[in-house]
Image (cartoon, rainbow, N blue to C red):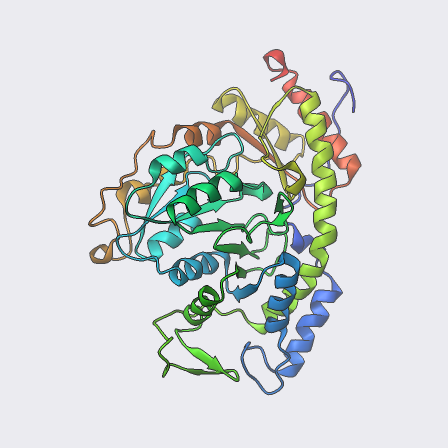
Length: 411
């Protein structure tokens, strides 16, 4: 790494997008899709010459995750909602969710006519188990932890809390496909694990998702819910069955699954590359004395991004702006607690007569989760992407070092 007085150089001619699996797409994915198109069978359950790509994708994911059951769905949000509905979450129920992360986690709870209760985070940017415990009430029917940007939440502590109260724990592993916690794949330790295959994910289909489950009865309920409430026999649906209940259409197509099969194969080498690159970046930033994000299980990290904390919000914004000027991809990520979006303050849903908040005392206001509000405004995120190599990591590190040296104490 260069000394502070040396001149920075650009990382790449232009800032790359923070895409992961999408950067690896090539003829393999194209050929898989063409095979499905030639079969004229793009629906997963039947067609003129059904190839069964979705069945194969589910089986291959189950082997990769070492999970008993995997159900492919249309998005990460569909995965969350399917898991919640399979668990019977509904009106009057409270679901504890983290105060930091993508809004889809809380949105899925509201879409099930349940009420999200926000738990604060710690310096891992994931759920603080102590605050989860404090937020449990008689109405708590589930806990959803999110493995933010590929780093596992404190699963041992969260599972102790959930199991001790008889409350199912759902893992939102949308940003952490292939990550592990103490040697086990994320998304397989709780009652259900939810994944996203959106275009900036490790496995990228443009849109798509999956639910992993151990329990067969839960899997059967999830499969019914995601398929308009039906039970399938030889590919064809029936609703004339005692197991049926009202559902929605969250099915994955054969086209998406075809892409997914290739992306899943590539994910192993992608994860290895990202982990090696991030390990070097983290080593370099730590050597500068920066205040880095805590990782509960560094060995299981997916390697998709590094995060460090600035002294205050103004400095954080300046650091990000200066990194971008140096052509380093940097971001504030979500930049606020989830509930700071106005729709939470207003408790606004599409149809007020069906609002899950009507009979609930749960409210949202500034100061609800102070650590999430503070850390969201102090965090500098540096994504790691497949276009980088070790020389790029060194160049990024030099840029950070050069910029941080201009602040008092270099921090």
